[in-house]
Length: 160
Image 1 (cartoon, rainbow, N blue to C red):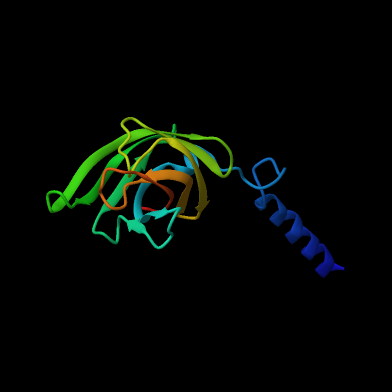
Image 2 (cartoon, one colour):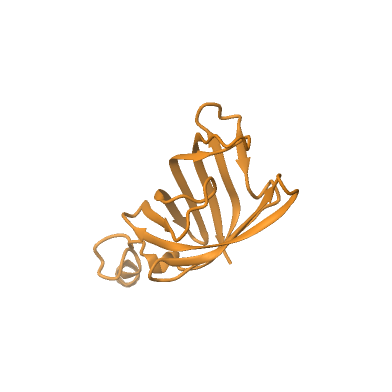
C-alpha cells in the first residue's frame, strides 16, 4: 500500500511538469523562444526546375549571423562570395519576424537583398538550440546571369 501511495504521489508531482504552465497542453512557441543570437550552419537555395542546381552559402565560404529580439526585430550580417570582385562581401541585415502560427513566421527585411534575403512567409521548426527555416518558392540567380529562377530555400541556424 505504501508503495502504491508513493507511486501515485510521484505521478501527481510529475504531471504538472508536462505541458504548459496552465496544464492544458504542450507549451506554445513564442517569439521570446526564438530570441537570441543565431549563426547559420546551412543556408541553401535549390532550383525548382533542376534540384541538382544549388547554392549553399556556408559551403561557398559565406556566413550569416543574426540577433533576434523578443519583439521579433532582428539585426545581423551576411557574408557572401562575390564572383564579380573575387572576394567576400559583408552586408548588414535587419528587419522583423512576426509569428503567424506554431510553424510559420513572416520575415520582413528592412532592405531586401535578392536573391539571398527576401520578404515572405517562412516555415520554421525550433528544436532545442536549432532553428530550421524553409521557404517553398523564392527566386535565386544560380548562374549570375541576372535572370532569377524559382527556388526552394532552407536554412539551419544554431543558437550561439
